[in-house]
Image (cartoon, rainbow, N blue to C red):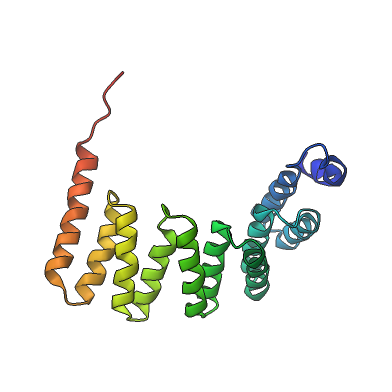
Length: 197
């Protein structure tokens, strides 16, 4: 069914704008069957037909990474992110790929951009904090994680990472406070019961 839909997509797309979805699903099946060359062939054609669809590029970049072609994956995502500066997912993916490629400064730049694009998300800030922590740039890690806590003040995991950073900075009292906040939030979550209607 997906193969048929993918084959007819070039003719159908003028009437049905989401025909690219069949190609993504078929490529996903090929990927699950460990047929990365088959998945990549489908996705390359889909990208040629639908150059503006992030889901096509995203899956293609993941398949390229799995096929040990990280440079090609980075270029694919980088091109999309440059042409779609407003796309949060592309900026986040670019940051991750740059980090994997060993370019932490470019990764942080992309992740900072992603964090400005979606002021509710914390994934980019968490990645920045973890990267800076590995680089032993503790003040930068703390700043990024404090922003993540401000965005998700009810999420225990944000306080746990902040506590770890503060502890490494030698700020034991602040680290204990952050850990206590995480424990308090976890306790509230366990004690909260859904009342029947």
